[in-house]
Amino acid sequence: MKPIAILASGMVTGVGLDSASSCAAIRCAIDNFSETRFMDKDGEWIIGSQVTLEQPWRGLPKLVHMVMPAIKECLAHARNATPEQIPLLLCVAEKERPGRLEGLDDQLLQDVQTELGMRFHPRSGVVAKGRVGGAIAFGAARHLIYEEHIPLCLIAGVDSFLVAETLAAYEEKERLLTSQNSNGFIPGEAGAAVLVGLPSTLNSQRSAGQLLCLGFGTGLEKATIDSEEPLRGDGLVQAIKGALAEAGCTMSAMDFRITDISGGQYGFKEATLALNRTLTEYKKENIDIWHPADCIGDAGVASGIAMLVVCSEATQKAYAPGNNILYHLSNEDQSRAAMVLSYKQERSG
Image (cartoon, rainbow, N blue to C red; front, side):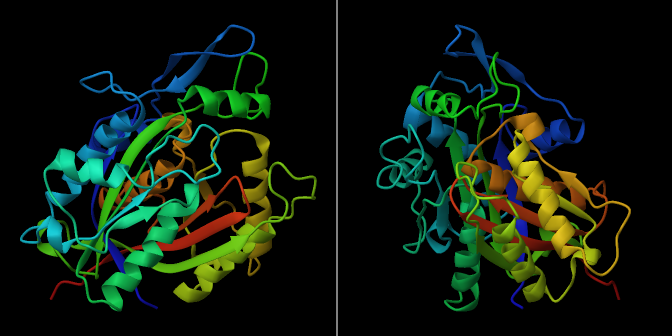
């Protein structure tokens, strides 16, 4: 087991322009859902969760300005480390995403660095893996920290579903919440980031406790949402079992779950099947499930990083249901990922 600690976090969402305000709104179940500038096929305004910035940026510039504040929040806790010493792993939408913006792979990272006026470590790069990208980036950061002895890494994600081509494609698939479809998701957008490193790094700047990633697992699901295969949750079960095995614990040790479920029956069914097939020792009365998309909409790849921010804030401020968390993500395609997170407090004396 090679634990990685979340040392700092930042977030920009439709309910707050930093991690504290966003997490406070999510904790209170406050959303900012409103009519967007897009219409559905019946001429009704599509409801979404929009990030309001100081200027009406769109496209790639808006992504840049949503993720920059989140990165700055993290860097404020980096103490004496300079950006040149910290790799930035920037998570973006998968290549198959309908309406995917041009420049995500070869321009966005450069634009972020230019706008920030800084350069990150040469091992920086883009992770174009969709929702599971945050977990994949965690695995990459663990390699950089343990194998290449790089003390700190930044994992950031930014995405927006508020793109005409994207909305049209999901409406056509009856996946979008519209005036004619109640079994769909509310589109959102967000930027989020976490600074990670070895446990106890930078601990003098925070409380005595830290949220650690203790286990990581991936899986492949044959019965995707667009397939006709019967859903058994095989891919998510595989990912969860891998994460639990690496962490050296069982599902019964988990206090709650957090997931990227954003609306529609498929995600809830998959999560329920996975729980039933992994909680084998004894049946708890309940393992609560959190899904921040209820407040910030479906923010795509940014959802996975935002979930980490929510977990960090909730455990640091002691309003989480417990210290052991199962975190899991599901892509549109077969990719599934899970992590076991645990809040650990250092013993005094």
